[in-house]
Amino acid sequence: MAPKTKEQTLAWLRTISGELATATLKRLEDTLPWYGDMPPGRRSAVGLVAQAGITSFISWFEDPKATPWIAADVFGAAPRELLRSVSLQQTLQLIRITVEVVEQRVKDGDDVLREAILLYSREIAFASADVYARAAEARGLWDARLEALVVDSILSGEHDNELPSRIAALGWNGHGEVCVLVGTTPRVLDVDQLRRTARHLDADVLIGVQGNRLVLVIGRAEPAPLDGDETSKVPLAFIEIARKLEPGFGPGHLVLGHEVPSLVGASRSAKAALAGFAVARAWRNATRPVMADDLLPERAFAGDALARATLINRIYKPLQAHSTELLGTLWCYLDNGRSLEATARELFVHPNTVRYRLKRISEVIGWDATGAREALILQSALIVGSMTEPDPTRKR
Image (cartoon, rainbow, N blue to C red; front, side, top):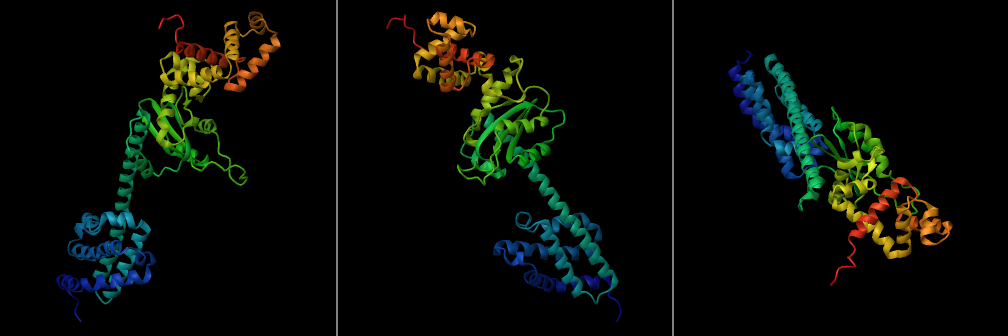
């Protein structure tokens, strides 16, 4: 039997293209469990890709120079369904089965046709890898833009009801409390290393860069352990997580905001961290990282309303409500340069009484007035708190 000309082969391939497509779909159902488990709509989309592959081969066999259009011809049938529903590995399985069906049907053909099938299968495999690579790159760019948008919303405190869905789209794994960490952007930012470090600490992070500032929104990736549950892993404190992440920041101060119950409320922690970062240089011995609440005096002096409210609500008002005697003792102790004897003389009490009252003050508000740094925080709270009291000399 004389060999067919290329025109005859093309005519024959076009005649059997429908038969090849039907045989391919039948083989997919018989050999690929994931194909049979798909919903009808997605299965149909994958089938369209297989049929487009056969049609594209015929066109390519007619004009091999059409290689650059292979991806558009084949994956243009259902690109979104394909990329969302089928992995790259499954796509390569699809290609292999389609090629096997075509090879079996044309096994009696000439060597030119068989060689063309092998070459085309290689080209389509590379084309599919390119499609998935481009899709992954596009998703990465989109995720980066979405993450930047979410971080900007948290920093500004201006967000809408769509914030939770945007956070979910980023694959946020955090649960419960959240803190915001602010520092300088390093010369070379290794985002992947920051994420790896966070994962090893059972934490998740959202990363944002604002000029020379690097902002991390930190959440624990595991729920907090239940009381009495000895099998649960005790999560790291946020300050410990911040210390582990510290190498990923540039030189300079590193400030951690206070804990908030959830990611949606992270703007409060962000405001505290940003305010602390702006004034951290005013504390000569500030640690790295430092808690934003350890910078309350500097923040209050700079006009931070949140710091003023924190000083009043966590120190001044609780102490005033508990005992005016303790409040007066603290005023006197700080005004006398933290001298027990001078305080005792002014109050006409024994120095041991002053010691006892200072201990009670520490128990009530959690700050120890005998330390130099905490004394500054307490004195700032007294000054700010007293400014909110009504003027007794003013006539009503």
